[in-house]
Amino acid sequence: MVRSVRILFYGVVQGVGFRPAVYRAAVKRGLEGYVMNCGSHVEVVLKGGKREVEEFLSALNHEIGPLVRIERIEVKEGNFEGEGFIIMPSEGKEEDTAYPPDIAVCEKCLEEMFDRENRRYLYPFTNCTNCGARFTVIEALPYDRERTAMRDFRLCRACREEYTDPLNRRFHAQTISCWNDGPEVYLMDGEGRRIETSDPIREFSRRMEAGEVGIMKGWGGMHLTALPEVSGRIRELYSRPFKPLAVMVRDIEEAERWGEINEHARRMLLSPQRPIVLVKKKEGERVHLAEKVAPG
Image 1 (cartoon, rainbow, N blue to C red):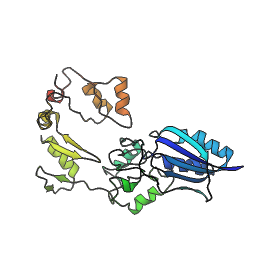
Image 2: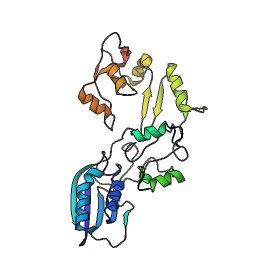
Image 3: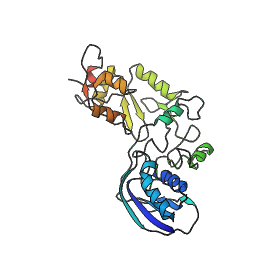
Image 4: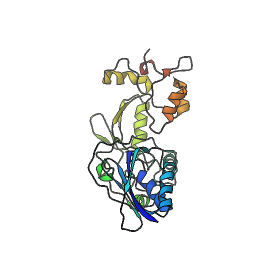
C-alpha cells in the first residue's frame, strides 16, 4: 500500500550534507517526494510503500554524515502528487535553530589539494559537504549559497557539475569553489598596499620566517601570526602579558612535542572541529618553545 508521510527533522541538519544524504537514501529505496530546508528544520515528504518508508527511517542514521545531529523528529501525514524525488528550494524564515560549526578540511579534500593533477591543487578554500566553513560564513538560515559569504561567487561549469551530481560528495554543497570561480588570495603590506607576487601564501611564509608579524584573513576572521621567537610583539599588540598564545602545528605528532597530550585532548585535537585545546607545556632540554608563547 502506497502512503505519504511528512517528516520534520530538528537539530544540526542544515549545512552538514543532510539534504544530499536524504536524497540518496530515498532514491535508493524507490521513494518519491522531496526534501527542503525550512527556517528551523528540514522537511521531508515521502511517498511509497510502508516497508520502504520504514526502511528509510531506520537506515537514515547510518547513511547521514558525522556532522548531522538530529535532536527531534516529527512524523505526520503527508501529501505528494509529483514524480521522483527532488531537493526543493528552501522556504521559511530564520527561527531558533542550531547553526553548524566550522569543520576542518577532510582527508579527501586534502588529497585533492596536494594532487598536481587535480584542478584544486593548492587551492586554499577547498571544501565539500563533509568539511569547510559553516558558522563563520552563514549569514542567515535556511542554508543556501545566497545566504553565505560565497553568494557573489558564481559556480563555474565544473563546480556546477559536481553540485548537481547525486553521487558526488559536493552534491548540493553550498560553499564549494575552485581557482576558476572562488575568492582570490592576495597579500598586502602594513599600509594596506597590495604586494605583487605570483604566490601570496609562499611570500607570506617567507616574511614570517624573516621575523615579521602578519595577519591571515580566512573564511570568517583574522589571525595575528608570528614565529614563536618574536611572539612578544603579538603580546604587545594584543596587550596580553601572560595568557598563552595559540600554537599552530602540522599534526598530532608535532603537538606532542610541545605539550602533554592526554586522551581527552587528543580526541579534541583530532575531532572534525579541530578546536584550540589548552594543555600543559612540556618541560625539558629538548623542548625549545619560546618562553613568551606560554610564560610560566
